[in-house]
Image (cartoon, rainbow, N blue to C red):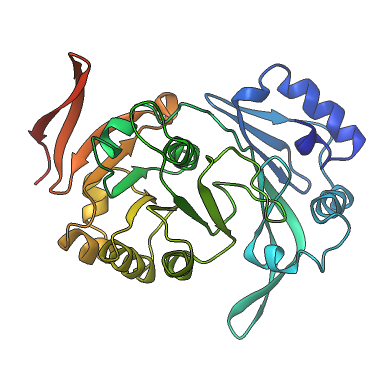
Length: 317
């Protein structure tokens, strides 16, 4: 975890190493707040570093490490509220907001940091793949609450589709990586294994990126994280009409939550998505809990004679 530790001054590095111990692999976030205890969020627990408390001086140190002592070079990232660092880790920042024309111009001073630990878990999407591909790929929406593993899952889906397997050929995948989380590109180079046939539009707005990809990259599959705006919906509809399959994620606690959202009304009415896959949280983080078809009917797969069969049950009205 050198990429994480180097962000902190030496006195905090030692304390952080001692607290995390052998639990680095279970670490999800480190939250730093000036003059407050540092918070460590693990897969199944939360721990606090009582001392030393980070000061404004430490906050400046962390910001300099994040920007490599060139705040001007990272002006756009700072304005967006996050910076992606080597290893694909994303650091969210907060503090005093400076606005101009009702838009965020800068965050200064920065007093809060949320270091989200990026993890590549190859094979974590295995349980979802029979729903996404059963002789053909389906438009698929992956649902889950915050920190349910959606980005980690969709990253592995990209890798599996773009690399192929003994049972299905690889496809051309384009990731619209607006927040640099899926591929975690640094200076245009992905930090994660996203498959051999994957192209990335990094730090690109989702709606614009989907149209750019269709015009210039001829993808078989478009992958987008955390849709929600009406323009995202319009772009997905246009992509589907162009014959491109879309796999995306969205914040939703369950299928009913999704169907209640006004921005999703049009895309649901047009039955674009053929699969809705719900992830668990807490102790079931990253696990497939339920799968639904385009009508909200619950489906499940079972192995029989080497073939995947579908079992259909209506659970949503």
